[in-house]
Length: 330
Ligand code: HEC
Image (cartoon, rainbow, N blue to C red; front, side, top):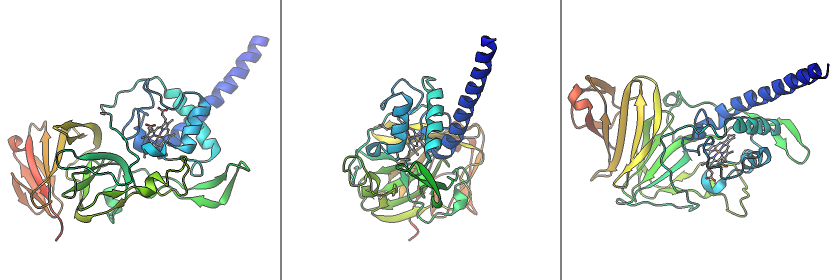
């Protein structure tokens, strides 16, 4: 009798715990996967499944880091964006994936709280960050999940206010942005696997991102840094390559970042460097074993193959290693 009761009780509880995890997973997919990877394996955000747990593994500690964020390390604060039940469910989901040790092929980077970070030609500076859309068309972002509006949550009263809806953060959440000093900066979108834009001059003003830095509390939710230089190249039109894209991580070759991704069966690596005129010289390597045709945006010039009507045709040999330079519009 008792046993039946316990079994019934447990199945009820276990079912509801499973439901929490499932709801948490949905919240995670929409708001967190951009940075932490679809399974929490880490992308521009840390791996949530490995041994390295920085902020504690109890549910209370996980909830706290979700609420407050780690502002100095580009983990946003979600208090006021997500509701308390959403944060609780997401913490349950994270607990359920902890210790799975999923692989992500990512190299570790150092974060900074410098509001005006800077790199140089010899030692480019790479940051994983939100970036402004910079006037680019929505059509370029088919892989970006659209965050949902959520009612504002008041943590003193513990109630939601459906009259006050908070918009998801407006910006590109998962970019890799690199600065080579005043000659060139570029933003690469890891969700679309695409070079989005380049600029010359100063790099970024991160003040909004790090807030005023007083005791980790912030006055606004403006996570998007400001571009400080003159925008040169902006992409447009169809994606250069055909097929589903997947960002694999990056490595450095003599200090220069090399971005790794695949498009369908094609494995690509992309190394971008500044040219003489401040153009971005993009060196692609691939495992292509047949001829390749790709779409070039305006102001892109391929150094091999044949370009006609915005399409570049490369022979199987050329497709293994080719270079495209991206110039400003003027
Ligand atoms: C803009 C990228 C970004 C987004 C979006 C983001 N995170 Fe993070 N998150 C990070 C980074 C970077 C860290 C590592 C912080 C550090 O090094 O201390 C982190 C750390 C964490 C940690 C702590 C891990 C540990 O080792 O203790 C948790 C938990 C977490 N995030 C959960 C979430 C959840 C849940 C969401 C969505 C509601 C989310 N994150 C959205 C970037 C992000």
